[in-house]
Amino acid sequence: MTTITELEKIALEDLTERIIDNPLENDWGDTIFEIADSTTPIYNYDLLKLAADNIFLATNEPELGPAFDGSPTPVNIIAANVFEYLESFLWENLEDLQEEILEELADQLDDDNQILP
Image 1 (tube, rainbow, N blue to C red):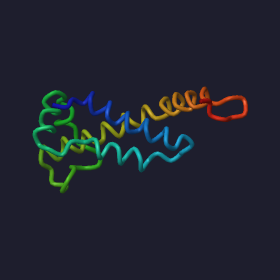
Image 2: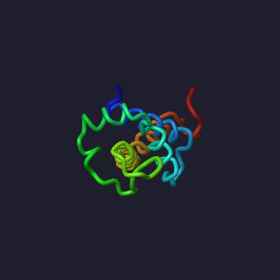
Image 3: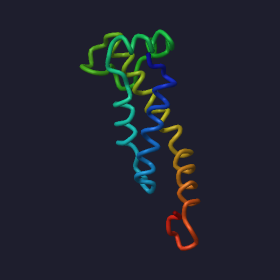
């Protein structure tokens, strides 16, 4: 069983890897959308368990409308809310994560901006 906290961790790890691979990127919209989309569970059981743990996921009306085929079923609404939650979570953490990674990369450079062994 996956919790929303575990999904946050998975999404943040994916974003971290992508920032490390492309630290100077300045347009993260498509990447964040893709990570949130790929991290959102697709199985009814997983979505319903998430909603049972967080009633907001089942009761909030998603801004983007229901997920999957767009029909307003409970599972589609839950999936859309999970996606929107993860997308928002990634945007909220992006700047701090970029700063942390850039600092780590800077620490790995010598005076001539060469990567230290």
